[in-house]
Each structure stands twice: as structure tokens, then as C-alpha cells.
Length: 295
Image (cartoon, rainbow, N blue to C red; front, side, top):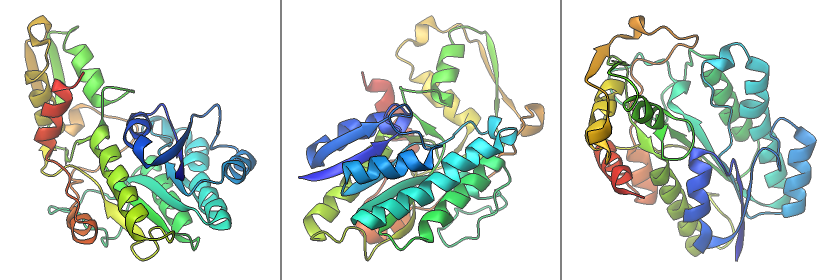
């Protein structure tokens, strides 16, 4: 039986990982109270004590706007900690799966981003996540860096839950319509992660991700604006009849200023994931339909 350490157990992806990985081995899932990624020595001690075969780092500093005024904390968690995790994984012969973000790009492209495109983050959050990627790459450890985007789920704080709640409280909402991306259900991320690990358990003979290490885009297929995304999941709301919302207004980014700059276009291609692992993510529309039907 493999031993899998999951950080961020109560986050959107971490919550789903606890369910999807359970058939693959012994799962040790920890939260910030059990493993504080801001404390390097605690990271080292926990990994050396647990000695996992896989470390799935689902923990991150994800408060994009707050990071602009709290760059030091974001850097510790998003940039420094992943490098330490990689170092300790190398010492014990473990493989690392780490989640990154579309916010490593500036959004200036008009066609889907590839893994080989040059990153150029325009926010502190994006810069710290890119630094985390590079910290892992600098360590000679088998790893997958999975770039995902617009993550949503029924658990945790996210756009999906916030807009659903507000639709039952307000009569009008203005949603940005000129930022385009790939909304990705946290359960889809977890299920694909489980498939990636399962493939290694049956094929690698212990040298996990050694020959396929690198960066992979892990997002839903298709693209949509925040406004289009919200419109669709509000239509599928099981409690739609109880909504107080009467108007979902499309607005521009300039009409909704935020401390952090977001990329206007952050669609990412998943062709590399398909070509290497024969895995394909569902469309964003199917993800919205499935979460609306799930308990």
C-alpha cells in the first residue's frame, strides 16, 4: 500500500482528494494546524516522520487580492514551502504533485496557453505561485506541477458558492464579462489526480513520475467569462425558485476594480495531459451540471 500525504485537507481540492485517493493507499491528510507551510522546520519534520510515497500539495495562499498587501506570507506558503517539500521528498524518495495556477500568465494571448509559453504574472499571487513552480523544478525530484484555474466546489470559499449565496439575497448582481478562463470543478481536479497516481502505481515500479515529470495544464475544456459561468450555474441551481435575483448584469473589469490585476484571457490547453497520460478533463459545462446534481 502506498502512503500519500495531502496538505490543505479542508480546502476545495484537499477535501475532494480525501475521497478520491482513498482506494490508492493510506491517506494522511493534514490542515494548517497540523502542518503549517509557513514553518519550514515543521514541514521537514512532518515529511520525515510520515515518509510518504507521494506528497500532494493542495495547500496554498489563495487570497489573490489580500496577497497584494501580504506578499511576505504569500511568498512563504506559495513559493518557499513547495521548495522545502521537494527537498524533503527527494531525501525520502517520494514524488510530489503540486497545484499551480493560470495566474502565472499575463492574459495577453488570444489562444489557449501552452505549458511552454513564457509566464509573466501580473499579481503578487501569480508571482508567488510561479516562484513555487521554479522552486520545485530546481530540486531533482520526480514531480508534476498541475496548473489549474477558476477552481470551484461546494466546499470552501469560491466564486460559485459566493454567487449562489448572493443570488438568494440580492435582486441584482454585476459580474465581469471581459475575463475569459476555464472554470474547473475541484472534484474533477481530484479525480484526475487520483488517475495520475493510479497509473504510476501500476506502471512505474516505484520510480513515480520520473520520466514524465514537469508542468501540465489541468483545467476543464472550453472557455467562458465569469458572467457566462455564473449565468449557467444559477440556471441549474436546484433552489432556483427561491432566488431573489432578478438581474445578472454583465460588467467590465474596469467597473469592478480590485487590488490585484487578473489576466483578461487565461484559457489553457490540456493537449499535453492527454498526450502523455491519455487523460481528458470534462467540459466546464458538464462540471457545472454535475456539481448542481451532486449532494
